[in-house]
Length: 64
Image 1 (cartoon, rainbow, N blue to C red):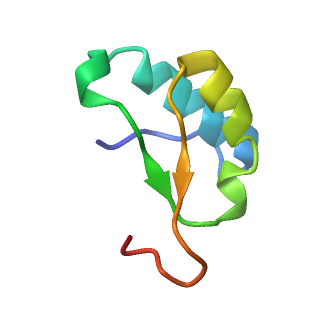
Image 2 (cartoon, helix red, strand yellow; image 1 turned 180 degrees about the horizontal axis):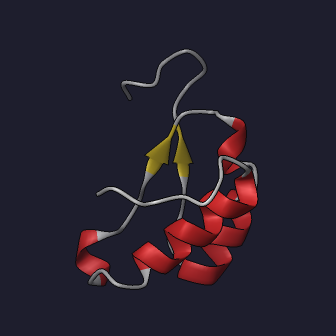
């Protein structure tokens, strides 16, 4: 899934993901996994707004 962003900052990324997640059926959007980039610093805001738990890869292991 591609999401158009207004910026690379954490707030812009989280807002775009919340908007995108709300359009999908819950069965298709259960547990996103991200690397440890600063753009997901506000991941708790995303989880509270979407009720979707975020998981993070181990350091230096973005393939997980």
